[in-house]
Image (cartoon, rainbow over all chains, first blue to last red; front, side, top):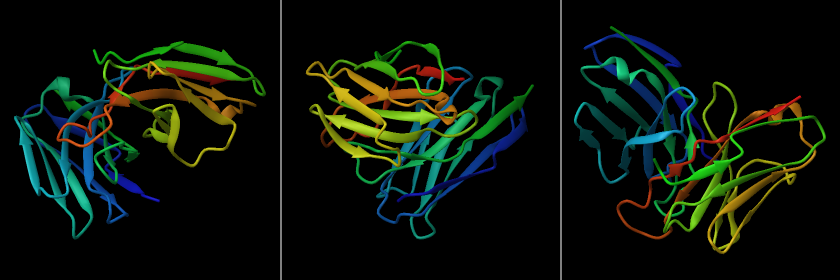
Amino acid sequence: GENVEQHPSTLSVQEGDSAVIKCTYSDSASNYFPWYKQELGKRPQLIIDIRSNVGEKKDQRIAVTLNKTAKHFSLHITETQPEDSAVYFCAASIGAAGNKLTFGGGTRVLVKP
Amino acid sequence: ETGVTQSPTHLIKTRGQQVTLRCSSQSGHNTVSWYQQALGQGPQFIFQYYREEENGRGNFPPRFSGLQFPNYSSELNVNALELDDSALYLCATQPYGTGINVGELFFGEGSRLTVL
């Protein structure tokens, strides 16, 4: 089955700096890659996603890149703010309909004011 | 607010007992998935239901079972509880079909189960 590795497990950045989280996946058939943000005691919430027919996607301060050949994808957060502090999860799945996501282990991001 | 509600929010059980967790689906979402999230880890896929039938299962033993009802709400049942079953159980719903926005899962707040 699919296996998703996520690095780093913790990331501390100064407010205003950029944060980058990297994930690799094992199944070349995976074609949908969402990123979820989970604040303490809260539900995971989708922040951005990318499909395998796209190499990069951006939404305001966040962007995701996908390298299908290398089977890795990354989340970039620019101009970090204290409210960006949370745990971020990458995930992968095969097929957009009826998603069964395989999640990475998570990255705890701390933005220091 | 996603419209996905789960109950109970917290519960404590002892080893060997059985537990039922419930999830009500967001309007228009006919697919429901269950995930187990152990402390400090990413969610792990348990199974998915579509049109009241199991539509895929992760690496979980048969003592994890589920149901989906005609109104698309769902139950997760776990028999013979073990200490390692202690986790946050997340329900996630989505509309089934093709389309640009089908991929997003809408999670509930979860049910935190502690097994003593």
